[in-house]
Every structure is written in C-alpha cells, then in structure tokens.
Length: 144
Image (tube, rainbow, N blue to C red; front, side):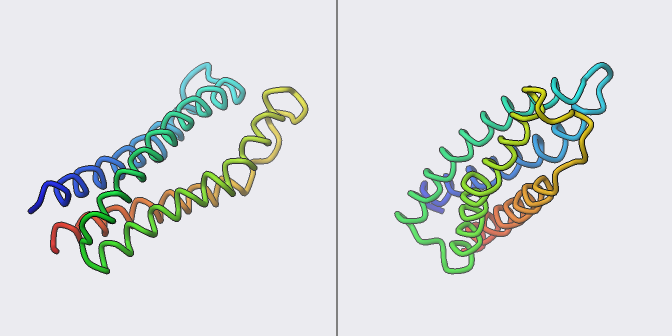
C-alpha cells in the first residue's frame, strides 16, 4: 500500500472516530450532566462543534488531495465523496439554521425550553451518512 493510500485510510477512520465520539457520545451526554442548563450546553456545544468542523474541513481537504493524487477506485472514491458532500451540506445548509436558533436562545429572544428544532434531525442524518460513508470508503481503500 502506498503512503498516500495509507494516509487516506488513517485520516478516513480518524474522521469517523471523531464524529462518533463527539456527535453520538459527547453531545447527547452533556445535556444530561448535573447543573448543565440549555444555554450552558448550547455554549459548550457551539465551541466543540466549531472545533470539530474546523478539523473536519482540514481532514476533508487532505482526503480530497489524496483522492486526486491516487485514485482508490470508483467505489471508495464515491463513498468518500458522499462524506465530503455530507460535510458541505452540514456546513452550508444546516449549521446556519442551528446557529440562528442557538443565538436566539442564548440572547433570550427564544425561550430555552421551546420545542426542539427539527433541524437537528437533518444534522444527525448527515452525521450518520458521513460516518457510514467514511467507514465504507476506508474499507474500500483497504480493499483496493
């Protein structure tokens, strides 16, 4: 296996692990911790997800460079393309809506106990799609 393919596999599984740890373990648990109010949880979540999204963009760019340098086959490239597209949808379409809502809660314009936004379901859906695509793409690169 070439150095580029090895890098591609490592970064793909690193990215999947980060999303699983933060989106599916840390994020839901923080709101169950004693003393964590909705505004505090939102503030923490915004910081954590801003950091995650920054790292995701860097990983996505390096993965894209690896894909362009050494094509791992159509199957793996398509799966990784789905992961990259999922991230783009989150950053460009979903995050702005979530940010407006959290700004409203944090500024007191919207009550913290208002009904939950359905936009979170879109975010979670893209997270699930992204993780599956990353795992499938990583396996595809290994199998190539």
